[in-house]
Amino acid sequence: MILDALLDEAHVSRAARRLNLSQPAVSNALQRCRDLFGDPLLERGGGTMRRTPKAESLRTPLRSLLANVADLIDPPEPALKDIRQVIRVISADDPMSFVASALISTLQETAPGITIVFRSWQGADAAIRDLLDGEADLAISVFDWEEENVERRALFEEDYVVAMRRGHPAASNFGLDSWLEWAHVLVSGRGDLRSPLDPRLKSLGRSRRVGIVVPSFQVVPRILLATDLIATMPRRSFHLHAEGGLVAFEPPIPTEGFPLHLGWHARHANDPGIRHVVETIATILAPAADE
Image (cartoon, rainbow, N blue to C red; front, side, top):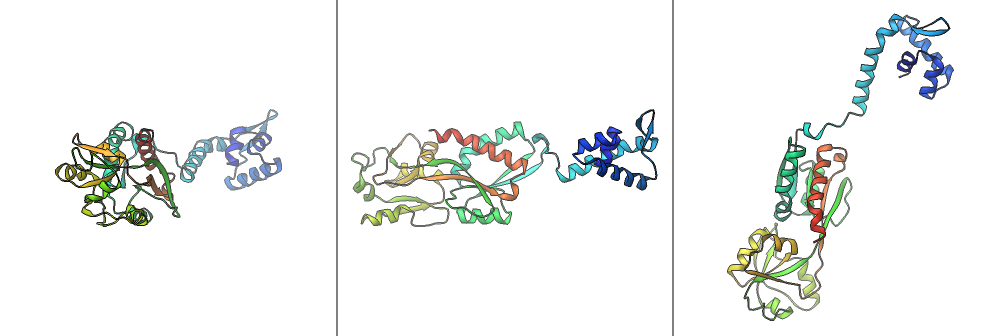
């Protein structure tokens, strides 16, 4: 870089000021370059310093070399339209339903070379493992703890409603007793027979009966329409999947909601493709936070 400044300025003092170095340091560097190339490089003539023919011949290849070194150390960020990348996203069915079509529609316009591969959600612990192991690039999940090397972004806060078919016997006088009188639908990707709701009921000296466990909220509305089962569903999931024959009530006991997060490994912090997908998903889901 010193030689580039010297050849560009053709003046030791100006080169020193440009580089924020002392004039003796730049003079010494010039002498070392003269010894290296076996040429004076800068010569005095007519009261000024002039570049020798050798110096003129060095200017273009030197700048090219310095540009390549700069690109190696700090490569320029590619344009989104030039990115060719597969990004693997872990997500439960509902968040996938919220974002998939809008995400792909946006990427077709902004980054058509990005391919999204959605993978099924097997719980937050499994999602964290896949992010750490490099099996996934992003995960939409509830990450209610901090994990080293995993960055996360809150997408929105979710709460619950109690859903049942219109005309259900519990609908006419809905309350705690009528809620617990009927079997419940439980959604669990791992086949669990209990959820955080059950310890809260136990603290009240109550319990519920689970009639069926399914892996996705998408199938719940049809079950409710065809049976007398009751389901506690995320509010947005109910509005996304519910058909006209269903009604919803506020839970009869305090029911804690949950934040939905988008997580990725810290190694992807400067990946332009992943950053773009993160921002796109966050933008898609931002209006949901205000509903």
